[in-house]
Image (tube, rainbow, N blue to C red; front, side):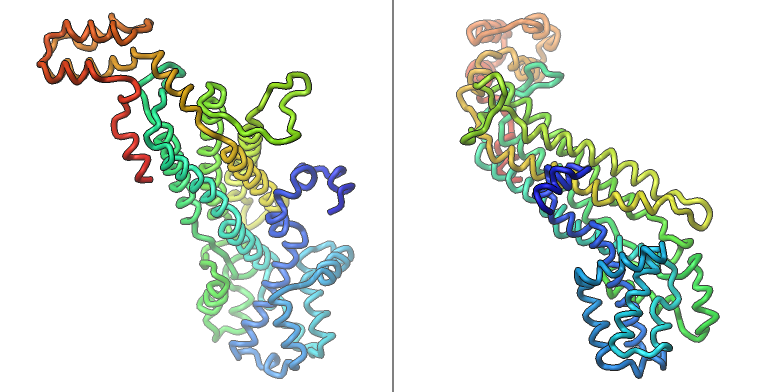
Length: 456
C-alpha cells in the first residue's frame, strides 16, 4: 500500500497503523479469503482424486494434477484478480471461486466430466467455514499467542529483576500493605498466560455436510460411500475438528468461544495498562525519552505514557467487536440467514485492533525503568500501613480489641516510626513479638512477594 493510499484509508488499521498490522492483513484481507477458498476447493478435489471412488478423476491429465497441486499451495495474485473478475459477473463470491478452479483445470487439459467434480456435494458454507477456520487458526498460532507470550515474557523478566523491590500497594486508591514491583508484574504474567492457555484450548471446528447439514445430495449420488467418515478424514487433514451437527452453516459456537477467550486476554491487558499508567503517574516508573519525540505541543517537559493509552484504547475497540461477534455469530434464523456473512468479514478488524494493543503495550513496557528512590520515599511516608501487622500479632497474643485499637490509632492519620514504636511498647506483648514489631519497616513488610515473583 502506498503512502497516498494509507493517508486516504477509511480504517486506521489500513492507514496509520498499517505497518503494525501487516501480518493480520495478510491473513484476513479479501485476497486472503479468496486464497483460502481456492485452497479448500482444490484440497477437496485432491481428496476425491486420492480416494479413488470417482472414476472420472482417475484419468485427470498430469498437467491438470500439477495445476491442482499448485492451487492447493497458492492461488497467486493473478488468480485472486481473476476470481474478482468472475465475481463481478456471478455476483456470488464462492461460485466465482468454483468457476476459477474450473478454468484453471480446463486450461491444463481437464475434461468436462472431471470439471463437474469441482465443488462436488458442496454448499458455499462448506467452503466458507473451512476458510475462516484456517484463517483463525493461523492467526492464533502465528500472531496472537506469540504476541501475548512476548508481553508475558517481558513482564516475567521485570518480575525476576525487581522481585524484591518494595512498593506501596494501593487498595481503593489508598495506601495499603506493601508489595514488590516484581510481584505485581508476576501477577499480570500469570494472568496473561492463563488467558493465552484459554485461547489455545478453543477447538477449531468445521462442517462439510452439504446444503442443510445432512449429506442429502451425497447420499443420493453415492449412497454406498460412508460420507461421515469421508468428510471427517478431509477436515482432519486440514488440522480441524469435524462438527456433524449443523444446519447449512457451521453454528459458529467455537468462533464465539475464540472471541470470548481473546476478549478475556484483552481485558487483562486493559487492566495492566491502567495500572502501569497509574504507576507512571505516581513516579514509580521513569520512561525513556526518544530523540525528537514530543510529549505536548505546548508543555516541553512532558513524557506521556502514550503506548499504554494506545493499547488500552485499541483493546477496548477490539473487545467491543469481539463481544458483538461472540453474541451475534451463533444466532441464525432457521437453517441459515446471511447476517453472519458481513459480520465474519470483520474478524480481521477485531483481531487487528487486539494485535495493535498488544504491540503498543510491549513498546510501552520496554521504555520503563523503576525509580527506586520514589518507591522508597512513598513507603517511608506511610508507616501507618504496618497497622495490619501489629493488630494481627496482637490477636495472636490475645490482646483485646486489637483491630479497634489500631483503627483508633491510625485511621485517617499519618503515623511515623517513633509514634508506632511508642504504641507497640504499650501493648504488653512478649519480648520477642515486641522486638519483631519494633524492627518492622514498610520496606521490609512484603511477606512472600519476592519469592512469588521469582517463581513466575
